[in-house]
Image (cartoon, rainbow, N blue to C red; front, side):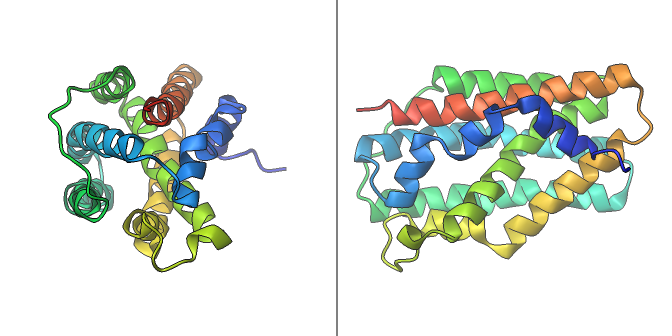
Length: 219
């Protein structure tokens, strides 16, 4: 009998946390197109602040990658965040008639940035990678699931740009590449290092819940 992949081991270690992040009430609000302007405004601003750090993390991983293919994956991921993710934020602000405000990172944003930035400096490249995987993979999973919903099929859905981006085949493929990379980097590593990488993965998954909640609790 084959042992589960390292990625599956990380998911198992999350327990209910992963599903709580994927199916958070904020995500349900996205699917229904029913978030308040303040909720969406806060989410987009805070996500923009978070993504600036995520771009740096991706480029750190690119610098630590041993193969050209992995380096390209992380550079492409950084480019996706810079051009597509940050790009649609500006478009959504206009479409939803939101008002931009210069916010500082909220507590959940700061915690997530610190979690990934700290892991990116870890002696173990596997730990650095494991901490960054949940963001890419979880958003792709949310995008895939929401694309199957009847309530997200309307072309005039207010969050059409967001839904289409994370359901896009290129984003889905990128998430699969991150998972494959995680499994490959974990191969043959000492159990102590594997355990630390699992903890980094779970910590980032918890940060995802807190990040959704931060926006959800806005009035």
